[in-house]
Image (cartoon, rainbow, N blue to C red; front, side, top):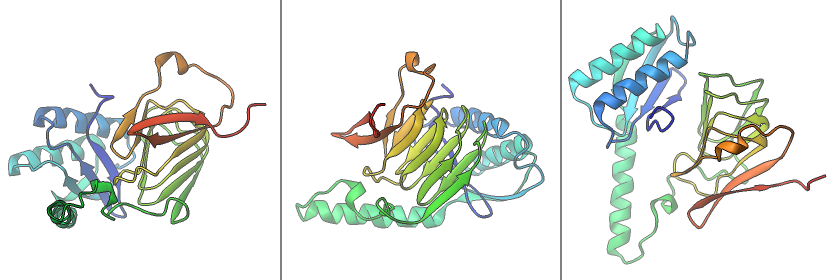
Length: 234
C-alpha cells in the first residue's frame, strides 16, 4: 500500500507542501504521512517549517493530528500548518475556465488550459550534483537534471522534464502540474514508480536487476507511457 501512496511532499523555500488525494481515507493519510516523515530521517531536525496542504479538505482536528505527526517524526518545529489558499484560488479559476470552454462547445483537456509549466524545450532548470539518497525529495517548478544516481526511496518531482545522468531506481514524477509533453530520461532507467502528468507506470519486476548502461526515455503517447532507447546500441 505504501508504494501506491497518493500523498506527496514538495519542498519550498521555507517549508513543505503536502499534496493529498481528496478520495483518500484520513487514516491512510495519517499512516502515509508518518511513513514518509520517518523515511526522511533527521533531514528536517531542528528546522522551522511552514506546511501547506492541497487536495483534501481537513477538519481542525485532522490538521492538528497531521501537524503533530510531522513534528514528532521529523523533529522539526511546524510553525504553520494550513490549506494552500493560493493554489485553491488558482484551481477555482481553472475550473471556471474549463466550464466556460465546455459551454462554448470548444471543450479541451485541462492540461491545455495554460496552467502547466511550458518550458519543456527550454526553460528554468535545476541541476543537482551527487547521489539522491533514500528519503530525499527534490522538487522543482521547472526541469530537473540529476548528475548522479537516484537511489530507491528517493523522489524527484518536476513540473517539466527529468533527466538523470546515472541510475534511476527511485520514484520520479515529471509534468506534475499536468503537462503530458514532459519526458523522463536516464542512463539506467529502473524506477520504483514512474509518472508523467497523471499517468503512472511501473517497470516489470524482472527488469529491476538489469546492470550496465541502457539510456532510455519515457514519454506519453495515446494516454500510455512508452519507454525506448534514445541512443544507438553499441
